[in-house]
Image 1: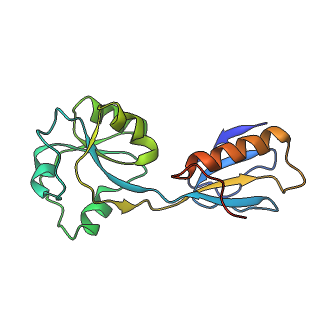
Image 2: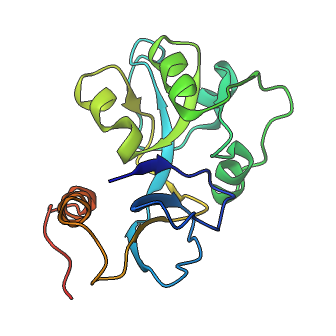
Image 3: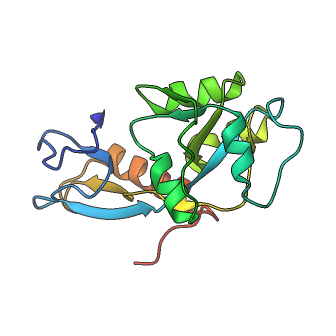
Length: 176
């Protein structure tokens, strides 16, 4: 079984790939395509960075601390969705990927945008907190690309079943 990380802009998945988890819908090319999740993103930071969590979006929080950027999530979209004009004087730190941005957030360097998949362990362990309950949808959904039903290996099928259950909030199988 081959598992490979497919970059978001790639829509043609090579045929030798047994299973692909994709950010954005790839071309199925005769294979099965299932939507796995439609996560929302929200601001997170180290609990030491702010004194208390707020259930209200406060622009002032975002003017005191640097905004941590990755290549996936846009703070411009976040501010627009909140109908707030993004202040011009914000400090910004850019990272190559979400993992780096979340590490910087855990270390107290600023506020990052991320989803439950990427932050659940950090939040559970108390390394990050959500600054608000408000969220926006990610630009793309996550999909699972698998071989046609009669062509997949047993290992690929077991992995697909596991990842589908893991991506469901109640860890149940989807209805067929």
